Image (tube, rainbow, N blue to C red):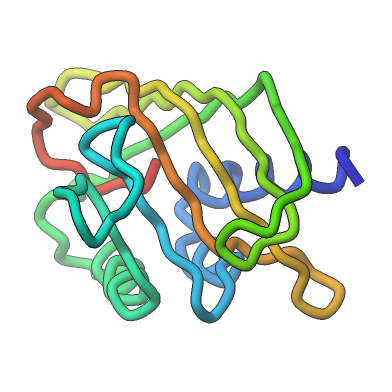
Amino acid sequence: MTQQLIRFVEREARLLDAREFRAWHALFADDGCYWVPASKTHTDPARYVSLFYDEPVALQTRVQRLLHSEIHSQIPPSATVRVIGNYWIEPTTELGAEYRVESKFVMLEDRAATPRHVYGGTYTHYLKRSGDAWRIRMKRVDLTNCDQAFSTLTQPF
């Protein structure tokens, strides 16, 4: 089971690096969400400001924007590389999930004529089974520098 969950998280990263945003979106449960809080201490996205908080409709809109040929913040498109490791996996009933998979990551984002962006932090995936596939109930991304100012953030972490 552990290897299966690790492969799932790594597949998600590969899809994002390949800009396969529709396939990435398909990894989410119908009620799944994507959250990047503005502080590691935040526990409720409805009560605090977030860098990203995409419930199902907003997540679909994000994917549509990322795929749009004229998204100004992605001309030219970013090239990204994510490196993930240091996994911690445990069963959970939080958020209607079956497993909580925590991992550390570093993401590099390169775009022509702009400085390289380096992001790092912790992913927390809340995963649940749907038929014979795993789905993301919530993906939380805690950036190490979440409390700092950022230039345009368009790429999912």
